Length: 316
Image (cartoon, rainbow, N blue to C red; front, side):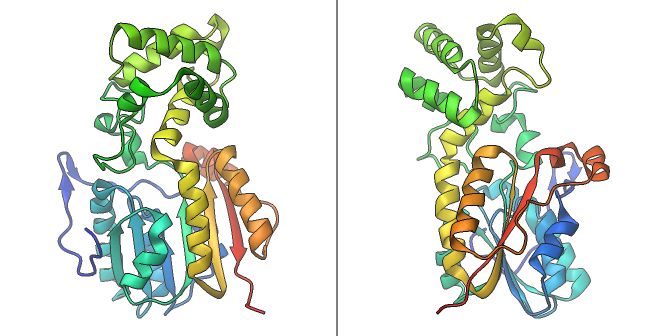
């Protein structure tokens, strides 16, 4: 679905029509971006299209909505939401690209767009990815240990990464990307286990982690394997490198006075975004916007969300 402007018929999955999950901080994102009819807005992490559909409505009828996502499977769901949004509002022009947001400058050039008015990045993992056992992001249901945001065969799966990663690097990833205090114990357990057999299923990895941590840590507020899965997912997808490149691409693509809004879900990415915005852009507000109690109760994914925004300074 690379560069698709003419959207086709809605697609159903194997269980009937796709249900778009509730986008986090939607009202606040719209207010922060300040979208107007005729604007060009880029949703660099379009996901299932929840935010993008609202953005499309805001820039209709003659604006541009350019959506990017690394995951071609997820883009098929976004197509449904955006088809409905365009039908309701008689516009705007919509283009979807199967590409990482670090490539958004090249994507805009391919559409003949010199600069955009707004860029939005939602850094959370899609609920559709988490809910699919075949994608291997979650330990809640057993599945192949994949974890790739896209399905590029050149990118190693989590199982392949675990098979070859050096013990010291594995420990570092768990400690830095997962902020896991038992990183050493977990890394040693994984390395010992992989000598005996391949680790290829999410349930296998979760069981290894649970067995590696002390007894009290197995019954905490979050599942003992949560931080390990987060850390490996970040490493497999180069998420922090992708974020740094994506922020640069967004800034270079914005017109003077254009806005970049970023929705983060954990402290590692939030620190990168916070530093970038403070050093490179003007800040309309210094503290992040967070979800209120009502949204957190309705949508648990919103509890850890932080929305930050920067404005591109006018050239001197």
